[in-house]
Length: 473
Image (tube, rainbow, N blue to C red; front, side, top):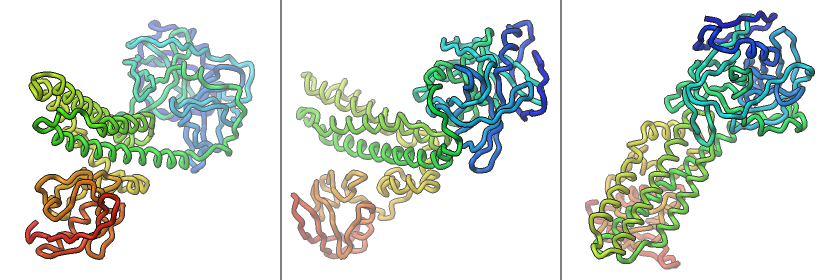
């Protein structure tokens, strides 16, 4: 049921939103109807020659309108139309807040009523109202704020209404006609659209007194988006590298503490690794993306870093407890170790579509492909290891030929490699940092049953050694 209708001249937007509505006598219609002269529909011509529609509203001071930053970020020309049919060209942007998807735009009108922004947070399950401009009619519709949550550092009001892109930037009103939020759309992990309101308190953080930036001077959204994607892709790769290196160190720690090893205490390397993991977590936690694929990968890598950091803390606590009690490696440290192992073992298999998403990003992003070492692709199981045998070494993803660890009684130890060696060459081939230890293994396999010369760096000196490669690997 439409609660109230107001005829508008000409300009109509095509909106396919489905709105939950209740009868007119359930809400303060007169106060809400007074807000209509302050509501604007926007026709936006973009730099890539598309035309899109959105909404805005007058607020803060004369000549200023509030809208969605995403809606106008790629604009080359914007026209505003009021419900009475009056049109105005908008000269440009005043201020923007990309994180909260808000913008102030200049409109050369004076004397029209300004909407009041109420920064107080509404309660969950409370009613709210929004204007829907459709087919030369202006309808005020009721919605419910289903829940309020903070996601990636941003407070969000989840709405019961299903909005369309044309609703974005419009005001979310309380029964008094005050603005409690700005309408928007986001996508969840399943790429489903969610209708939201962003708190009006974020509007008050914008500066209406900044000089106007003409649309032509704004950096293209496509260009900005590509640059932002490169930043996101590089940090996702860095986060995955940190997960690999953290796993390498913790697996070594398990052997380090074997038997009575815990009595030596927590190695400094573990504390250094914890700081590196915290840094990686901090770097990726502040990133945002409008691309659903990158959103999922940001969420998954953030979760994995938190789990690995927690696992490292549990490993550390287990060693401290074992060393400080007469029971030694008893039930409590063993339980801590088991909990840490469970956290680590869940990655990547317990992270939904993460492997498929990484594959997709490798195919679509040159930045991600160049930032993710080949070692990582083997470790994640994205590409199959071609050598078909275990060498028995561990190394870090960014420096795969420096052997962090040579496992006792392994093939590597048998042919003469030692922990901390750096492999430089095998036969006539010099290895590059962009290759992986798997390349060394494939070449070693070609010398089965033979002797082959290798160059290594050991104790800061370049040495030539001869590998006696077994007949079977």
